Amino acid sequence: MDEERENGVGKKILREGAHLIFYAAFVVLLTFFVVEYVGQRTRVSGSSMEPSLEDGDNLIVDKLSYRFRAPKRFEVIVFPSEIEEGKFYIKRIIGLPGETVRIDREGIIYIDGEELPESYGLEVIENPGTALYETALEEGEYFVLGDNRNHSMDSRDENVGVILRDKIVGRAWLRIYPFNKFGWIRHD
Image (cartoon, rainbow, N blue to C red; front, side, top):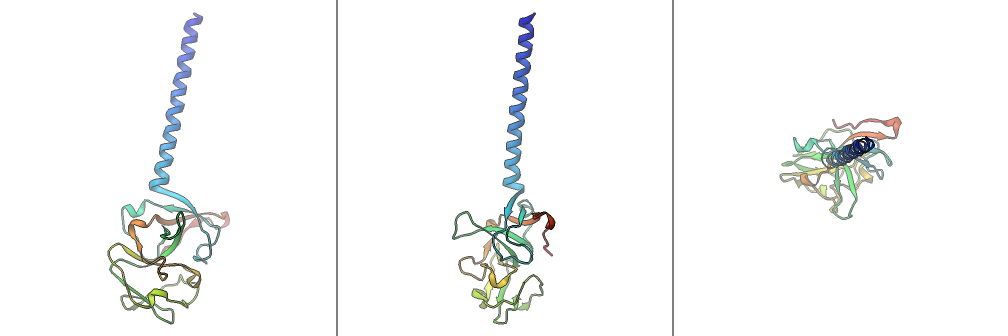
């Protein structure tokens, strides 16, 4: 009888161990899926998106939406730096595929020759950079600016340039830290 009881206890331990291993594997796979395809945490570094986002803000990036629809004007996106490995930029979409973008010497933004009414810029643009001359956006290309226009490395800089859709990681979705600023990111 003791032997039967020991076999039963052993089988129970094996069964519980198998459940634990299965559960741990499930959690690891689910976490990988969420981080790879749904969302990820990122931290804002620098002042280029002030006042909308500030240095040290922690965000959740929505990586799922753009699998079903195209990015829209004024959405805040995250994309990798082409010149600095492991660095990501966070900027606001201003120009869409098929449009032309130009910024005149007075800092006015033009889309297809029409002035763009927008209120995200912290200040008047002092240096239009490469956008002083009309930039024609091809299929899958986006023109982005930081909200802190005179302190932002964005599409006006030849080191950043236009952003290809397939390089966009996702859109800034939710600010999770600091806690007193917890909330959705404004995209309208």
